[in-house]
Length: 184
Image (cartoon, rainbow, N blue to C red; front, side, top):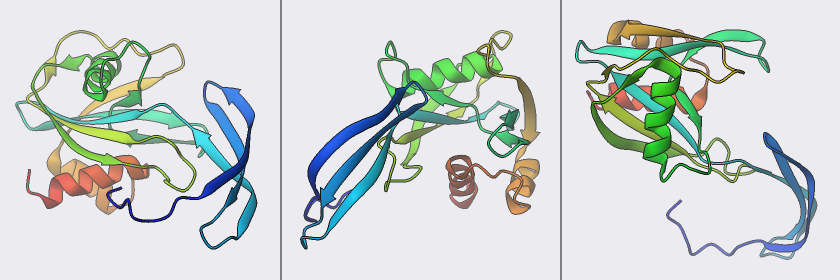
């Protein structure tokens, strides 16, 4: 986050409440630099996440339509995923996820930005990559728990979705807004 001169909180005690693949949480008692204590501070541990703004040579955005159970809604998102132990880097994770979920790959890749879902409680970061000139490489091969529809959309359609609040995942909306703001 850039700032290293702020005093750190002191951890008085720490214990895991849950250690599941998608719900690892620890409860800590922490002491702030001013001496105040928070007896029950909860930290959610997640692996690194990736999102991909993937654009074809025809300037079509590769988007995913997917149901999200917590909201009970289907929405449009960027291709995204979670780092796996065998992945050498977030870039490798991003390339793997794009190919698995959409069947698209290749192109020119750059790291676009890095975000935190919630630095107050989450331990991980989301690495966003811009992949230009991606092409269809194969059929999608999503995981068993994923029910995805791949959609190709032009820039005007994606921007309209943003303006109308139809892309609600903040870690996906923010990079798309940056993409349009920087004139890519």
